[in-house]
Image (tube, rainbow, N blue to C red; front, side, top):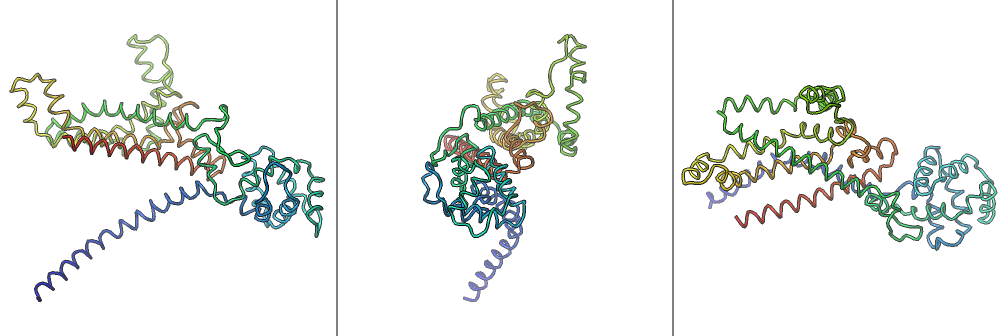
Length: 404
């Protein structure tokens, strides 16, 4: 019995040591990955500006049908809420949020805020008269509908806008006008460009990884240093180098004109061609390394045996060698694709307006528009579509394994 107890204690100590070793990694993942991710998803549906700034107004508008004139209590509520604001920044945040719904809200809110007080101890009817006397736009329904629609702290509006949908004044979901619809096109462009980059990187990486796997270990290590060299160079420096190479008077155009392939410089910069070239160059090591690691594990005897049994070299390669490298192709392709869909700097510097990916607009809403809700919604849509594609990849990979 003592021996059994000692074995149990030793097993518990072993498990405790294993858990203790994984705790730092788990804490790191929670603090630096899960918490920011959860914050992004929460901010994508959070709508605090109007709810925090106009609580009395939102309460007064709860039973409003959004078609008739708002009740007098709403006019009194907005006067009380604006008067309660301690800083101009609070009114500015409210004005920006409402202005994103109805143009002109900024001047209406800020003009009313600066004109306060409009009176003391006003009844709801007097508050209505004072507000309309100050600015007749307070009689217009769109401004009140925007306040009512955004008076809830949680909203699907940002997520709907990120897929070109919206809620109308009555809260019904509908398509945005054709001239305002953009994000579905941008999302499709993001995945299309990422797919082209991934395919191009794999086509270049496969023969290079195969050649590396055929070298001796010493020579292969030397070549791998050259493959990894881009990792030691700043992305900004590499993009600047491509600007020098791809410009009309750059080395590539001068070479093409020198060998007679073209009489005039090709437009390789500030368009999709330049973006694809630079992204493939930057992401190529992510495709080479998984392929190389898989190819090194494939016994070369298999290919030689197939040829010795009468198979043509190309047929032996396709039927014997290529299927054994599918895990490397899948891993490299997935790594390049997931990395490329989040690219911002390369398209921003080398592409034109029609070549920007979704990450550009996330940065635009974060840094220029200061609309964190919309930025987080776009990030959430990108995350969701990426997870769906990854789930499809996992299902296809499992199906292939089961068939194999």
